[in-house]
Length: 224
Length: 224
Image 1 (spheres, one colour):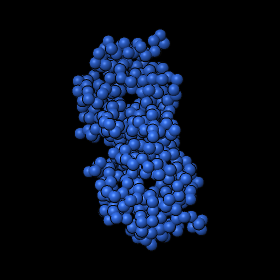
Image 2: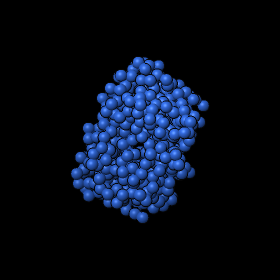
Image 3: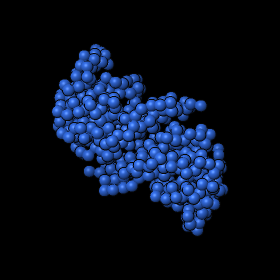
Image 4: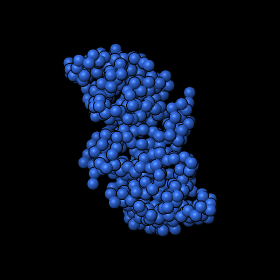
């Protein structure tokens, strides 16, 4: 079991807070990052006050520096600018992009085309000294934050570095109810990102917060 | 329970044969369509010989004419040409595009960008007198053809006509082990099509034939 520290950049939103809470509950040290250090600290302190969780808040650069694995959960609008400003702090780190480039209109979610192919590939371009993966796109923030609700989903992770991917899959599985799945190379990240829009479309039709499971998948058959 | 006849254009491939077999087993009359009527008839006859299934083969235009719901399972390369040639026969029908525009290289599957957004939206442009939906992209042909293997997957269907979508969801659920899910409007079809490449990428990594299930979804909560 890994217990390396995790930072969640832009971790003050629902998804970041939900992941922070569940990781910290599992004993993983987590730092919530934000542009505003005081806000990050306030949100970390409010997540499970008095429970003594290994959970704190910091400005994004400080959060990144202290972590082995850094999750990127900033809004798509701030994605490029934020990562560009943190290239030094993220050098040598495993960076997991969990951002979904999408917007909404009257008919529901719409995917946004990214010049690089995906948010994760944009991160990969902006962070040449980091190992960039993509994952955690499909975990319902609502369910993560509701600790009475068991998490029931696969976390699909893609990337081109097998060792880094193994670390992130192990991290994902620290959350009870999560199965980590190696989804392949980084170039499939756009499919993972767009799938979030599909789940939101289903959620809209069924008033739900769906997750995803792959069937007929035996983890023991993963190729070396 | 609907028992309206189904045609599967380009139904001589593994996916078409698999769906034809499972539908026919469930009592749905199925016609496998092909450019070559004799080949279609031969394949239909060989699928479950002597079992008296409501299964036959015909040339694509004849198959289309006799059916209420027509599944399009042609190779992507022949998609535009085939549909253009069948616009008259498909007029007034519910057409379900199950085609996945993708190719393969040394690193696995690669999605193909379609000018209209998706194969299904291309079909919608080519068939203005038909009601075009998309669905059935993620059902493993191998599992469909292996009747000893229980099918364990959701069939996600998208489209802009609610009544047509209900008919197709009901058809999907004729296959034991399938749950039909309304995935939203036709414009999300590209996400369903691309997801096939994601499953193939996972299949490659795990020597598997995966399917997909959405979790935390209550069919009774579907909006009217």
